[in-house]
Length: 215
Image (cartoon, rainbow, N blue to C red):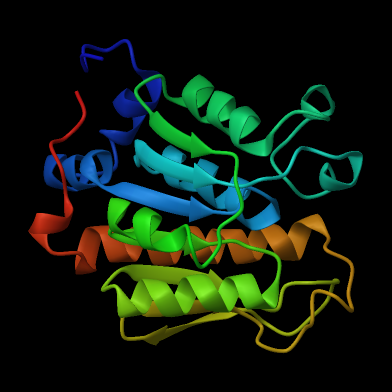
């Protein structure tokens, strides 16, 4: 797609970001592991910030219980999350390209998936799955942002911790299994994930992590 004024989001972003920043955002490929409360919100925040290339992985379909915090609407119930999220991303920015995979990340599938993206957003539910992705991403030289502690309401303040190529976000206190996953704190954690990912894209990733800028 030519950037000839037809793309409203691109036009608006040009008011706030320099051309070299926009080029980095458009050319980086970001992996989103999980398209639920964290992943769907973080993906749309990154798209609103100028990211245009995504690899989305999730094996689930939208359920009524997801509507309280995830970026889905009643019309999406029963459909694959990666399919619905792809539609929303492209509605926001028609220049977005998405490689969507309706599958679960496993120890067997990760070695082929990880090299596809220099940066991963870990937005999975299970502790074992979260640990698997983070550990393998770091061992493979990928940057990864991960969240923990976001359930309930009126909880401890959330913050970021940078540990080399890993950035952790959350309150580091709340067990999501013991507190209901409500929109305000889930979305807050997703925003911190997106912010950590933007920091990595604009200030940390080397030039060889970027492909040709989308046009």
